Amino acid sequence: MNTLFFIFAGILLVYMSLAYIVALIRKDNGTADIAYGGGFVLLALSALVLTSISSILLLLAGLVTVWALRLSTRIYLRNRGKEEDFRYKKWREEWGAWFIVRSYLQIYLLQGVILFCISLPVLLVSVYAPSATVTTGVYAGVLLWIIGFLFETIGDAQLDSFIKNSENKGHVLSGGLWKYTRHPNYFGEALMWWGVAIIAGTALLSSGNPILAALSFVSPVLITFLLLKVSGVPLLEARFAGNPEWETYKKRTSVFIPWFPRKF
Image (cartoon, rainbow, N blue to C red; front, side, top):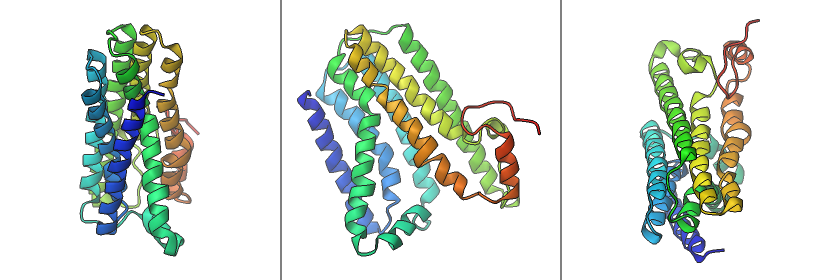
């Protein structure tokens, strides 16, 4: 493996360790959620500084940075002045005396590993496709990214507007993009990373690296799996289980990929 990957990993390790220290001082592991986006920006900038800058790398770094900064800013504004997220409070109670060690290992280091794997398209292009040129596949990836970005930003905006209205307390958002998918923001996030992987895969393939082109798709597969099966959909939907309005909405609305509501 190219030594640059060890440098990238070392930079990320220092960053996540610093985020952990900040969390200990703040007594709030929600710091990890804010730091998450920043880690992507750091790796993208590191790739630009440590390797040869190309138009494809600039494009990838720009797309990832826009997504990451929007995500971190939104999480920061949403959590500002509030108590620690219910997930972290629960772990704080369950882990007891091992909380400090397990927080570092299971929240910050694990998140760092996931972050690194999702960033692979950018890192692979920076190291192995420094002279890649723009092709049709790149345009297709950018189009997917734009569609995904619109789904995520519009979905989040509709959700924020819904929550701010006190009359909606206890009710389920079922209008706008949420009429066609129960998680338009998650769908948009996954779609953006499929777009990034297509851009990177196309660049690596044109540079004569078919195996690395395939490896770049570890990123969208991983983030789609996490959103659908681990930290996204399951955790969120478990909070609404048993709510009659939610159960009706759940029966008629696609869980992830947008589709017309079912009639029953």
